[in-house]
Image (cartoon, rainbow, N blue to C red; front, top):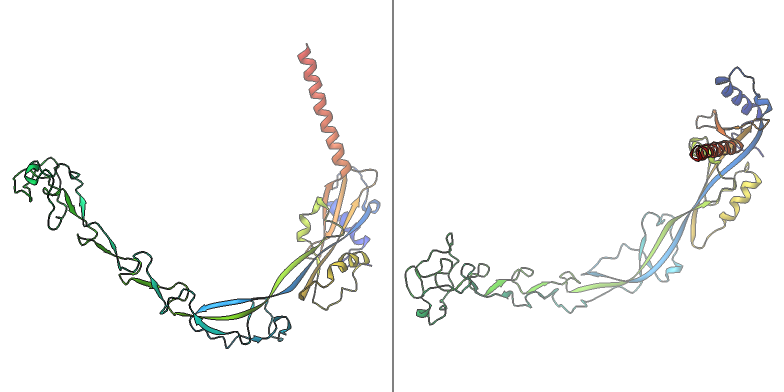
Length: 364
């Protein structure tokens, strides 16, 4: 059976003759009429199936949820899709009849708010009102420490940290009123006011903003949840590549990508093309059996004939002829396997000769 756009022998030989005429030397050679032609009927096909998956599970959403627009079912496996329902782009969400109900939040938050975990509902975090002076470290707060009973006194309210441009300089002590005896940072007290709480001993809680409670992360402040049994129907695309009965010739495999492949696109119930060869039909049919859950199917078939032309008398050349995308015949010249073998043997002989010469030179 002749494949679509399959070139005849006369067309192949005419294309070879035109190709050889462009680079023919004065030395006469074999003509295309003497070439042996071998046809390679390539087939590349992909079966793309839409396979259905049905899943069911309990779903929860915060607050009161309107599910009136979703389809309702009793048994998910028995639900029949309408002609306009094809969940290939996005899944079809359904609701099982009689399962929708409003219930309290699992966290027992009541009004949708929970005690803040950072401040434990106190609205603030405890803080030390005074901190050790960074200038004297509370050790040399005043040189007249005996007047303080040997220790720095505790001020009624810790002072703000003083400037200490010159730490060695002494200022009047606010505890004992002795001039030039106190640390300029704490002015004799040994401690300074905490800049965060301003000596109040409390820092407002940031997560709850001083409220003591935060919004419940489960019900998002609603205090209740809508629960229902949700069904989902989804079609997923599963492509399957059919192993080619004849692989692309590796000598021109990359060039064949731009070849003039004959393409057929078949739907779910479309028969295989009438002009398909028995070999190609046998390669395709095992991959066209319906799969479990298959709802739709598309088969993409690509066919191209490549003619391998071999000159007589064990020539080291071979030619590949195939239709290009514009419909014209394209010819590619390549070194034959025999020619590659001869080149390899010749290279190996040259290397062996060079090694032999080096050995003889070094021996003398």
